Length: 382
Image 1 (cartoon, rainbow, N blue to C red):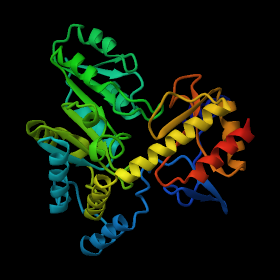
Image 2: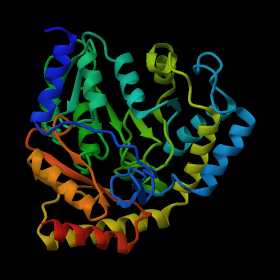
Image 3: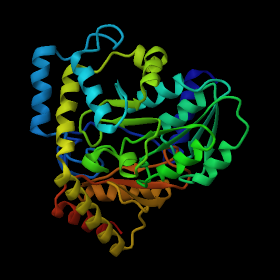
């Protein structure tokens, strides 16, 4: 097959499997309401868990900094893109989360890939939870190290893999809260399992940071765990964008030398950094927002259970409504959209075969009436 034939075949395969992805140009995707083709919907697909993307103080911080520093950083952090604003945020994050250093990356994807590309070598083993995010598993597959997967959230499975002969080092990888299932990893037990083999633990806490733990410090803090590598992102609960890797002093210096995603990417704009600083202020003071989010979660789960829907066992903002069949998941999504609720069907390969679901995300911005309207729509859709 030539390139055109190969591409056509790939597209046909996705369409036949009801796994074809589409992008839609919407308005207000990080708010409780969004607009698509002139119609307004209640938005239950946003990762803006605390509703901070439209916070006036955060918006003002971005705008004021942009007036002074411009809208771009002008280079990578190794050239001219690293400013006093970047340095101040890194120092604050490290102190607040209890680490020696923090390094800013342009996205969580880049942070995960950068760390895994730089640290493990040919004789090393990467041991990843089988449901880890694509950025983690893809980096592991591309690494020169050996990638093996342990059973989801199973410390004994990790311990068994860690006992395999390894001529180098071992790096265990997991998420704090899993992006498609909404469940939490048993971090202390996983940390102990890999530590027994002399290895390190890396935790991607994209969906826990800002939402769980004292002042929103995240899943590891909440569970009393201090992984050697912690990744936090600012595009979910913080409502902005970008990410940071938390680690010790020596590891940070190593990543500055070898993490290509850090070295060869234009740094995030100083205005964005200032917005993240403002978002961090809001997160630290955000107990009321976290309480509101938790009430929304409990209200939704109680209603969905009453209606007989099958939800994944999640206490997080991510509430997967399990369907199974791709076509049925798409049909349910379409029906709910006709009823004014915007949801997204998640299908393989993002989730395992037969695991199609509606990934319902709740935020602190949702009101009781919004939750009730979603439940009414789900009742009608049945």
